[in-house]
Image (cartoon, rainbow, N blue to C red; front, side, top):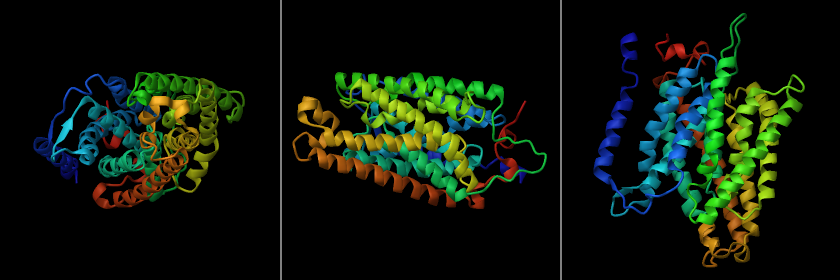
Length: 415
């Protein structure tokens, strides 16, 4: 068994070589149209530092949090470049641009959100299998949301955050195992003082760069500016609200819970994502952030423990940071789409709601398509996540024993 352990990731080397061959056959450099696209570098920092360090809160799983985050993202970015571009090939050729790299980084966020749901619960081979399957399905969902339904979702709250969260909860539901605590055993599914501090590095990087993430795929300068302003205001309001509500509902009354500070402060960035480029007014952006802060803190305080009681683990609480705020954003997009008129948006109406540009789709119809995008995302993500989780439980993927969870010892040579 020890000899075979050396080769457990060999299939991934085969997959990497297959990717290389596919790139050699189908991929060429694109033109210079997207060379000045905004947000790529900032989003890159979010993926590798923000997400990575945010997951280091577990006391004995920091190596795995950072290492697998890097491993998964590097794999998914290559795979997503192919899966996303498959729907937009020209003459059986994929033309890569800086925008393609940005979109692949954004897609990797979907998988990393799912990673947060099963952090410490899934083995390395399970994670890699899950990421390959999820990327393909998530790219299909993105195509449905953006190209078929033509839904407004510039910040990815529907196609990225909601999909990643509920795919992860689908996997976790398939794993479904209640925690069994041996008498006198030390629990590893929690933080230490130092691990919580390193996790705050991730939170702060994500918080700083989130306006770039939401605004990166905007079209006009005015739209870009609105997205940055609305995201920043929503984040600020969610942060203030998260601190206040945390002190109100915490087990130790009047004290802050670091889980809320690390995560719920970011919920405003998710909640504003689908509508950040719309004419919603700065005051409404703040209101959205307040709602996200309340929703997220209450989720961590009450909903996550309820899920754990029925065997659905959500290690990082992605339902509270990405899932529910993503649905909240999707609902807001339905409302604001129904209110959109050419009088309000002028020439920008076509940039934001492409299907409304020539009058072929009314505001009410656009709202229904926003609803369809949200509904399909929820069903497709949870359903395929559950099926993927069932497949990942096969012995081939080396599921973890209860005693092996949340522990770096299994995967790393420790000092």
